[in-house]
Amino acid sequence: MGLVYQTAYYLTRALAHCCFDYRVINREAIPPSGGLILAMNHQSFLDPPLAGIACDREVYFLARKSLLEIPVLGGLLLDLNVIPYDQEGGDMSALKSVIRVVKGGDAVVVFPEGTRSRDGRLLPAQSGLGLVVAKTLAPVVPMRIFGAHEAFPRDNSKIRMEPVTLVVGEVLHFTPADFKGDTKAAYKRVSETVMERIAALRCPPRRPALD
Image 1: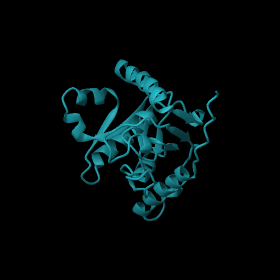
Image 2 (image 1 turned 120 degrees about the horizontal axis):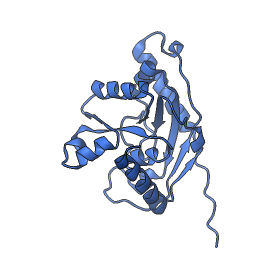
Image 3 (image 1 turned 90 degrees about the vertical axis):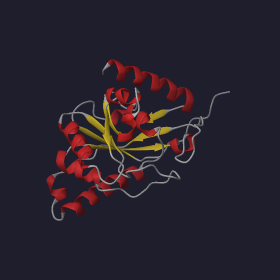
Image 4 (image 1 turned 135 degrees about the vertical axis):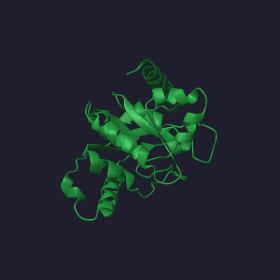
């Protein structure tokens, strides 16, 4: 990890545990090396950093291109492995960057829904994830975050100290056979398969605090 990334990583971990009683379930299921796609539901602006600290390895993220135009912040985000994308329609250049990063042996956080949920409930999967899987055949780790919507909902500017849990599922593997036939339909089908695995993940109850 670079110095900026490493500093942000440990600072975020400390804040997450302090403010959100953050916990990760089944962290050990995340492969420690090699090209990897971390596919997670999207509830809040908190999701990317909380997904990043769920891993013991460095990861890449997608972020709105407009954020990189902010002085100082833009340069900092690049040091934090941000891949800029244009929200106006599908950004193929961003997807190509994701594919290149995965093929290079790194891990990327991808949100199959494509946008943050307004009410915390899961949204339908978009085709972008399927395209990335098709071009890389990298393993996919389904992950589901719970509580991020309550802590920092999309339509609210205030952060609340609510407990957040991230549950990691078992690794999924796809082969060229999964992409036979109509290409666009195959992309959508694979994205939906991953989204179904995300939906199947459950949040274990927290242990009651000791008196």
